[in-house]
Amino acid sequence: MNAALNPDRSEWDVIVIGGGPPGEVAAQYATQFSGLDAVIVERELLGGECSFWACMPSKGLLRPIELVSNARNLRGVTGASIDVAGVLARRDEIVKHHDDGSQVNWAVGAGIDVIRGHGRLAGEKTVTVTGADGSTRTLTARHAVVLAAGTRANIPPIEGLRDAAPWTSRDATNLQSVPRRVVVVGGGVVACEAATWLHGLGTEELTLIEGGPRLLGRTEPFAGEILAERFAAAGITVRTGTKVTAVSRGTAGGEVTVTLDDGSVVVADEILVAAGRTPNSDDLGLDSVGLAPHGYVTVDDRLTVPGVDWLYVVGDLNGRALLTHMGKYQGRVVGEVIASRAAGTPLDGYRYRDRATVPQVTFTDPEIGSAGLTEAQARDAGLDVETAEYDLAALAGTYLLRDDYVGRAKLVIDGDTLVGATFVGTGIAELVHSATVAIVGKVPIADLWHAVPSYPTVSEVWLRLLETLEQQRRGK
Ligand SMILES: Cc1cc2nc3c(=O)[nH]c(=O)nc-3n(C[C@H](O)[C@H](O)[C@H](O)COP(=O)(O)OP(=O)(O)OC[C@H]3O[C@@H](n4cnc5c(N)ncnc54)[C@H](O)[C@@H]3O)c2cc1C
Ligand SMILES: NC(=O)c1ccc[n+]([C@@H]2O[C@H](COP(=O)([O-])OP(=O)(O)OC[C@H]3O[C@@H](n4cnc5c(N)ncnc54)[C@H](O)[C@@H]3O)[C@@H](O)[C@H]2O)c1
Image 1: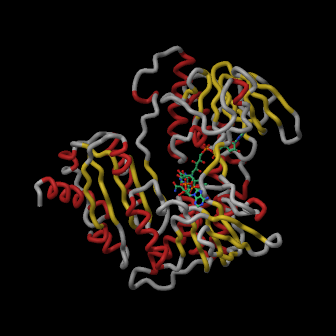
Image 2 (image 1 turned 90 degrees about the vertical axis):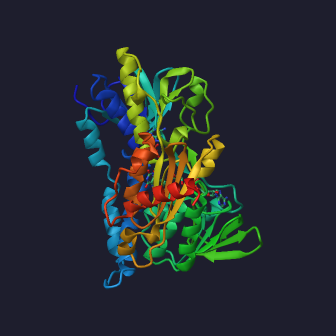
């Protein structure tokens, strides 16, 4: 049967609620070789937060800023500058002016139906969909329901914050004009990337307020420290260990007054809340199948809800790793699991479980990339690890890349294999996958010696890290 948008039918093998990348991939992998059919229920735009309000527009804003920053810090290159209107216009093209037609065409072309509306569980393998006009229809799944409803910005319960109509990441990625003064609540990935593009686009006064002890609290400490130094050099104020106690905005669109826990006050034109995410589980009908109607939805390694063997959760909603590539990986695992269970074939082997090493790149200036565990995470997991660190600025490859190069790398080693790696510096984003491969492949350190990095590249840091490790092991 040909797939369609809003088809007039009520039963599928697989129903996916939420059409972000993880939901799309789950539908694709469940159906592509199995003969099963699937429908994605999406209440907003097919492609989800990542395509229209998160990864894609943010990286679209950051790329020109990175390019100009690198050019401005390379003697012999002149004239690099940002054309704000041009950057925003390109961003608008990247988010396809909020038209998901090409995504719908992809789904239908892949044989996947799409229904527009808000989906809710309504008992076993049953989903109700409420359309924009208030009409309701009931769908039944023969095999599986996949929840892929994602997250939304968390607005902390700070006095006056909601009434001040703060920006969330959606506003910051889709900004149409650049505020002169901005206060950012939070110092995580969204806050640091947004501060980078706001500064790059012309915001003159930027203040980041992070409640925890440092920026990017889940990475190796040196990453947040290097970034904080770069922010300070750019005139961006970073306040760590600080809480916002009250926010007020006199008139709509007027300036915002932000009071901090030490009694000081910051006045800005806009306040951006980048204080983590809230799972979209509160209006999903989870109670109809006996689950708590709030919080992240717990799953096992097959991304299956324990005790509900037809219900799966992928992407941000399961809280495992709030990253598009990890959600898509989960979508691949879930698709294979559903197809295999429907066919009655055994779930043998690696590909039917979520076993992933998590990589991440934060596209600040400098970039921050990691794969696997930090030293602290490894020790918390009970591993007696060794580490090796190296100054990335001491390489020929980085010396050629940028005049004021700043960077650092660290490996976390358990016995003879790598369990984690962190890189900070210009041009490290593409380096992260080499670490992921080494960790996932459990490549012995002795073999890494034979993986020769090209000269002169940033990858040469691998050799320097191995030499550092060797010197430490020989007590020199
Ligand atoms: C500013 C920002 C930048 C980011 N940059 C990156 C990056 O560079 N790289 C990276 O890997 N990750 C990045 N992330 C994280 C990434 O956006 C998420 O991990 C990813 O979007 C998760 O996909 P998801 O499908 O689980 O959720 P979402 O993308 O939120 O998609 C969920 C979908 O479900 C729909 N939905 C929800 N409830 C229902 C319902 N009841 N019925 C029907 N539809 C429903 C929503 O409308 C939405 O389309 C970024 C996040 C932010 C906020
Ligand atoms: N490049 C990327 O891969 C990328 C980019 C953006 C977002 N993301 C993902 O999106 C997710 C959400 O990012 P995020 O930055 O919103 O969340 P986060 O959890 O990474 O950071 C939130 C930060 O806000 C702080 N905070 C919370 N409440 C606060 C308060 N009241 N006052 C001051 N500080 C407060 C926290 O201590 C934390 O440091 C992350 O898991 C991230 O991985 C990824």
